[in-house]
Length: 160
Image 1 (cartoon, rainbow, N blue to C red):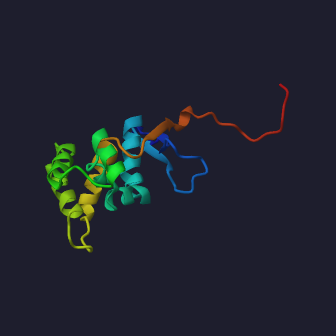
Image 2 (cartoon, rainbow, N blue to C red):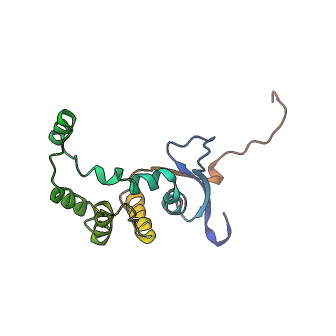
Image 3 (tube, rainbow, N blue to C red):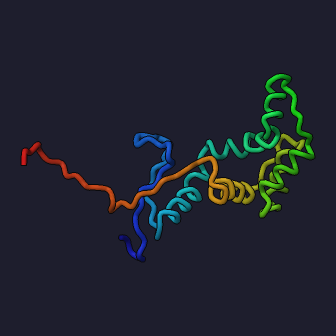
């Protein structure tokens, strides 16, 4: 327990190794497992280069072009998309149903004809939060209270 009633949690992504050099293992002060995971995602994962790339390089948006087995089969056979830009927009807008402002910001960014167009930092943060926390996608995380982890003290071998 730390001051303020919070607990210390060891938090990481579920696919993180202990020797991971990406820095995705942290100690988080929070009042619950879910709060620790939320804080981890909002303060660490949101800045992860893979999350940034997923959102900003189009991979996130691309998934709305091919959603059905028929669309996938057609694309794999011909290399052509069945979905129209209007269908793509509708799918993405449905995904952000309770945040139409994020749908608009992402669509403006995605369809920009200006190669220099950037997603505003506040929109990136809100999109990443929506994806990582609200939809719980891309990075799954786990948390364990530190006091639940057994402590072993270095010693010599004993038989007792």
